[in-house]
Amino acid sequence: MNFDTDSLNRQYFGFLENEYGFKYSKGVFSTQDIEIQISATGFTSGVLSSVEIYVWFKEEPPCTRILFEWILMHYIDAHLYLDDSLLRNYQRLSSAFREHASKVLSHREEWLLSSMKIHFGWMLNHFYKGNLQALLMTKNISDMYEYIKSKDNNWNAASH
Image (cartoon, rainbow, N blue to C red; front, top):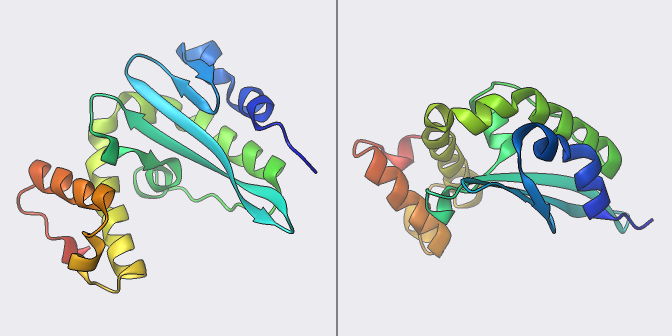
């Protein structure tokens, strides 16, 4: 089954245009200050099955672009249970994003740095088994590390 992801993005996330003044183009809802990228990813039995939402505030460096699920888990303290149905995943993510959009879009100082720290620590431990030097070999990850350190000099990546 083929899906028109632009139509799905507009169907499920059109509230960003109607309620928040975003413009839509090819998987990205944006304003002058914020970009929200929505991508259908992952395959189950050869069919698209997952959806990812990335939030980026354009005045911040690109390394601060963060997956909405990290914000949801670590700032809002909610968990989404996604499955192998693209349409159900669109429904669940759009519902959660709509419910928390005002917090996410208006209060990044409350969640951006802490979510990035947790995400960085998770990558370090989950994918790199605590090997910070290996993790920092990736440019965007290195940029993320430098950004976090610039905002919190006392941050210790190994402690997360």
